[in-house]
Length: 460
Image 1: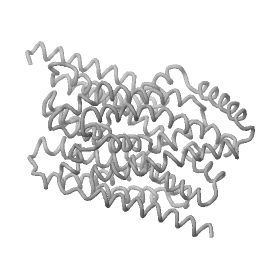
Image 2 (image 1 turned 90 degrees about the vertical axis):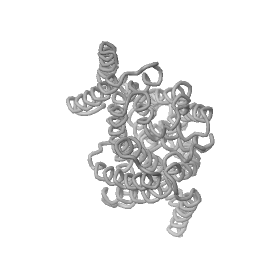
Image 3 (image 1 turned 30 degrees about the horizontal axis):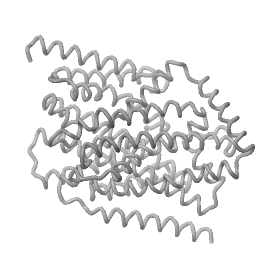
Image 4 (image 1 turned 180 degrees about the vertical axis):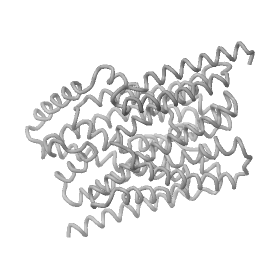
């Protein structure tokens, strides 16, 4: 009987999700595939934005960090919340106000030149693939935990299903399905916390507070102040306007919608981080000590939920992953088409749509292969953060605010930022041991101003 009910729940969810994707319609024009005709209302932009960032890193990953280090990562995560609010107030409206702009590369190309445009596109596609690899690895972990499948087969399943509807429907299908998935996991995961605190945690609220204090002290003791500063910097800047977020800013109906969606998303993330970290702390009294951080949430749900609830939460966990993965695949495909192919070859609308769909599949395959090299979910995200922020943010932010940005400054900053970030991580063995983002950001900003001064001397 339990099996029948579980299968029915899972099948029903998949049917509803399929119906939502079909209702979103297949994209027939590149304008639909890339930016949904710049007509998305506040509710869809907000829901999709939250569904994109509340992926496995900020759900499965944050529960694991709460289990290991208490509320340390809640404080670190608040930097991400602040970033969303600042982007909504200072950057997103300026980005949306640009004409004929599909991507950050377009914005950089308008402010600098075609060389900067293409270079920004190459970096963006690479980072979208890296982020997508982290999502694919998370999907493989879920399927391995539940069904005992090899990691590679779980990766193929999650990537294959997501690619199918993303390739067909483009950004609109991604946004509409994200909004549906966001509603599901925004309700069900907090329910797990209520059940854990109310019925399964020894010692009740007092026991929870004691475990939180011990775990947070352990977390603080495991990090140096310099490492904590590096992590705060990474969460403050590492996902700032990555291509999926930029797409939603650009696809918003108005600059006002763009602004409010990011501000509301930042405020929602504060609540979400508190719930996820609390789940991790509560898990210390439910799952065995020493459990791998990426497996804490599923093991906890298995311990406290009936079979039917566990299966439903499994589907929700997969939805969390798909909602981030589809956004990354679509954003990477649009970037490839708009920032790498179109500046070199003129494309009519139909051909651009074909290139975008082909690029979706290519990025999906690359992400599935790269998933094998991803360590833990949070560590994988930190590697991407450490490269993205130095390589793109100084060029983008200064380009939007300076009256006359210099192309040489943009090229030097992107190249130096990416190289220093990559080499720093290789030298120290990972993004979490020494905050490589700090020297990389400093080098990128310094390179920008050197390029700016050299250009002025040449009279450019």
